[in-house]
Length: 178
Image (cartoon, rainbow, N blue to C red; front, side):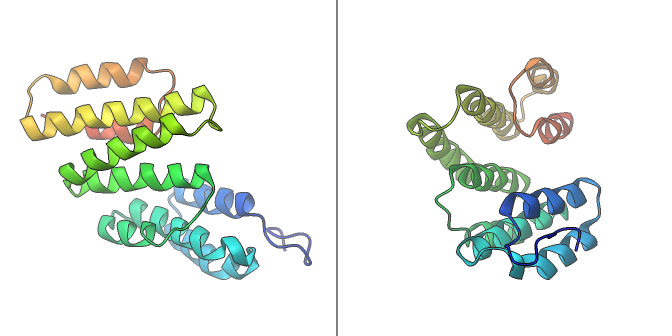
């Protein structure tokens, strides 16, 4: 088995994650879903449920099933800070897509506190996420206020940002502004 060369050891979460994320990036949604289900039993039991829920949330997001994305994210329970950040980012993007702006603004505030209080994150990783939520907040404001001219300003900010998570998605959302 190419995904799990050692039959005795469980499939690592990182390998599992990298495989399904690569499939999602390639647009192979059905293949990714089959992989998620076929190999979930190979994950360590303590991580299994949350990783499967996160992977299904990411799959549903790519399929534009945003309500389903949020349902899966609510079931993720982890102490791993990087997965918590994945959950926050994906949740914010789904809330934006659903135009649940008040919930997104509230989530942005709690995310800011999480980034500030967690000392295990590198400054670069913290900045990447802070910049994402800052631009997302500006996108939300532009949508709520129906601001004219915000599109070019936001596209400029996005293109000049060195440390920025979810850059392609932010560009797409800024291009959708009036």
